[in-house]
Image (cartoon, rainbow, N blue to C red):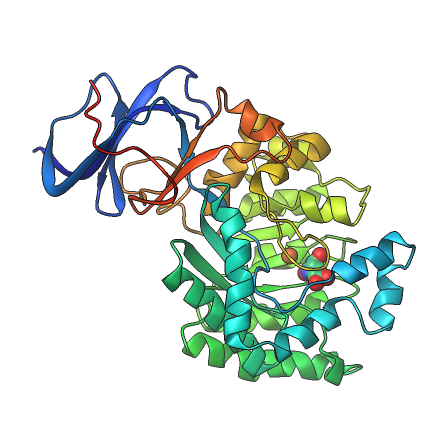
Length: 414
Ligand code: DI6
Ligand code: FE
């Protein structure tokens, strides 16, 4: 049976890790999906749909569209002033006590209109497109009341509708204790479990549930209450765990079959084994490590030894990771965490899709996946990770359509 195609992308150099450097491939696309990927010299027979377009490709490197699997992209204001104060010697705690830190972002996010939040997040999303991102996870967690958490998640959904990117939303109501609940953490968790999460899930705003499990945030028992609620609602979970200390968040998360546990600088071998057994992906966030001037490295060698897939992401947030560059994040994973170049690329594609539970749609150039891919003007895939501050993405194709950069159409190839 001949396959019908809406577009054909010729003469691409496969840059996915593991592929031979010189192989030229062609990608056949039907509507929003990859129909096939084949050696450029040996195309399967196909039939042209009326709108069929062929792109010559001009020898560009191709990777799957990058997948950002951990961001706090929607927030009001920014904390550039706090950055200056920290450089001048103020500690994170001093700034927080003076009404700054995460609470200042909560204040700004509550005060912002939905349009303002949309506009500022869209600007950040454009930086991600410029570096090949076609799918992004966006967390709530700077509202900490029902209305503002709903507002953040509606903005995230709207970004996915109005911009050419797939958005997955995560409810992070248990991110920090809102100031009006000071000294009443259990009551705040009651609010999260009885009102916020069920209501937002009912409105279709929640794809997954996250919490910040840390001495300075919520305890294992409090996070477990949130996870019980998620389980009751049939929502998958993930967790900010073992970032600043080891209090057992990873083991809790794996008991709930978490998609991912994230940060993990302080994870130990028992945590890593539990992740392996639960099929949980390790999401490492080198930009937060860098900005916090952390010195404790995540146990990368243990993840390798136990076969736990590692993903990386910017963690884009206004406090600990004002990061908008996937390529720089890959460089940091290599330079700071000892990733190989292949591991960094896998971490931003296949493993990031797995961290979202969306491997069947994103992260590889296989038949049936979304036709989301990035073309790169580089001679070798190492260059993606090697340059600091370059932007070699010549085009981003999402659901079979060029959404960033340019590609010459109409060439007939050979
Ligand atoms: N971990 C972090 O490092 C950030 N959130 C989290 O759960 C901090 C967010 C902020 O400071 O605004
Ligand atoms: Fe985070």
